[in-house]
Structures are given as C-alpha cells and as structure tokens.
Length: 397
Figure 1 (cartoon, rainbow, N blue to C red):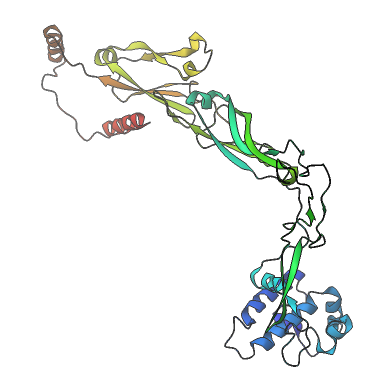
Figure 2 (figure 1 turned 30 degrees about the vertical axis):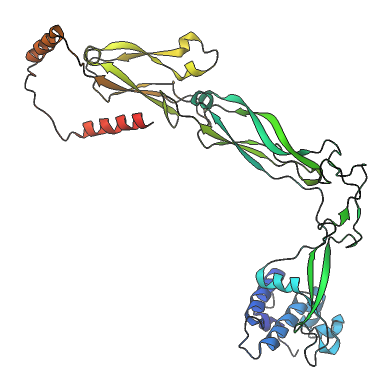
C-alpha cells in the first residue's frame, strides 16, 4: 500500500467511524488551502486528507485497503488517478465536490438532506399569571387568556382549501432542495439550498386555504383554566402538556408553562412555608399579658368559615418588643409534602404618647416603685440588634 490513510488522518486502525469523521474535520480545517495559504504543499495535503477520508469512511473501500488492495481502483471511483477534490487543477481529473460536505467536515455543520416534514410539533409556550398570597397558599383554578396558534377551523389543519393533498414540487422533484454549480479553483463547487418554490417541503399546496394561507394553523386568543396547586411559590411554573402552540400543518401542540407571580400582601410576608406578620401592642398589655385576635390568611379566601378568619393569640406577661410568637399549622401548605408551616407574629410594643396628668402620675408612681426613675441603660446587646434586624425584615416584607 503506497498511502498510509490511517497515518494521514492520525487515527489507529481500529478507529470507529465517528472517530475517523472527527479526525477528518480537524485535518481538513488545518490543511485547507484557504486556511493554510502560506504552505506551498497545502493543496497536496488537503487532497491526501480528502482521499484518506473517502477510503476510510466507505466500509467496502476500507475493507479492500485493510486487505492490502487498491481501494480506489476496486471501488471504481476515480480510476487510476483516484478520488480528486481538485478537479480542474493541472493533471487532475475533473471530479468536483459538494461545498456543503466540506463545510460539514470543517465546522461540524451538516446540510439538510431530503424534504422537511410539512406536519411538525408546535413550540412550547410560556405565559405568566399574577395571583394573591392566599391563592398561592391554598390553590386556585385560574382562568387564562393565551395568544397562541390553533388548528385552522376552515381546512382542519390540511392547509388546502379543497381538502386535497399536497403535490410533488415541480421545481425540486420532491427533494426539498436545489443544487447550484459554480466553477472555482477547487473545481465544480455544488451548493445545496432549500427549494424556493416549496420552501424545502418537497411538496406544494396548489389551492392554499385562504384563512391560514396553507399553514394549517391560525393565531388567536384562547381561553383555558389552569389548576394552581396549594403551596406554590413565586416563580414556580405549572406544566400543561399539549396546551402550547399547534404545529405547522396542524401538527401536535407543544406544552404550555404558566409562571406564577405572587402579589405582595398588606399584612403577611411569606418565608418558605411560614407566614410572618407584625402586631403592635400597647405597653400595658405587653407588661400585663393579654389575649388578642389576629387575622388569618384564610380570611382572604372565598367562603371562609368564621372560625377560621381569626386566630386567638396568647401574649405572655412581660413580652418585649421583637418577641416572635409562633402558631403551629397556620402557615402555608407544603407543596411537596403534608402539613403546613407556622405563623410567626412579631410583637412591636408601643410606648404611650400624649399622656394626661393622671396617666403621667400613675406612670411616675410605677417608675418609683420599680426604681426606674434613673434607669441604667444597657448598650451593645446583640439581642437588641437581632430585634431590629427582624423588625426591619418584617416591615420590608
């Protein structure tokens, strides 16, 4: 064997077809005359790479070569001169090549082969809906109005006004592509492109439907209802299979994804499965202890039972500002699990203002009894810092 095709491509003799193809792409890029223009032997090297790939990518020629025979002569390709990608260069036979094959080898791109299907799956679609915190917590059936593609009602997706089937394109003969040939220093360069007459389908609709112009689908507003599960969070998406855009030619619909946006609530802030709120409490009630009624999130739902609208909260005597009182099982239902989070109520103790003489006298007497007329002030308490951080978070929520 005069030529070492495996050595030319730099692959072992047991290389797979995919490995041979990858090696060819790499070598073709390196030695192509347009890339390696300063190398006087670039044309010769490129010819050798092309010839090696022609043999090793063809199972029959490769088998002949591995047995020590002449694969080019045995394969009947190119005669004694062999495969020649430089037809037209002095001394070489005119063979020509398809530029799309070369580009595919060099850049990993592959030209389309054959007609593309007229009936195809539609695109997936994304829409957004805004819901309340209560709807997110307890679930809701939400109506949607989606701008999408639907099957054409006039032709039922066939694209033809008379219901007839598409006919073979006379321009490309059903191949869906046309080939143009140009002469260059490389020889005859064939360029493949989608047929302009049939747009690459290989068939034409002679009497297109006037409503969809032969596409088999029309764009319109579509009303549907999405069931949003209890416990969804802001940014979650609900997947509706087969509810997206209908494909060309009346093809199957893609999927619809509904992204959830939750409106801020005037009382509650959500923290995972927990709800947080701030309760303002008079100083006397915080000092003596009390029982209060606070709003529940269930109160925002339709037909909420009266006993669920409020929560009875026991405030211990001596409660300080920043104290968080947790109520188990009154938070948000868990999306992927059972039970609910907790409701956290942060107490903000309010100091009385606008005291009259009697009130001031009573507070003065209390201060004297507690020896607090000239109290010592504690500074740098990390607990105080923690309180202000929690309070800030609660108000920013």
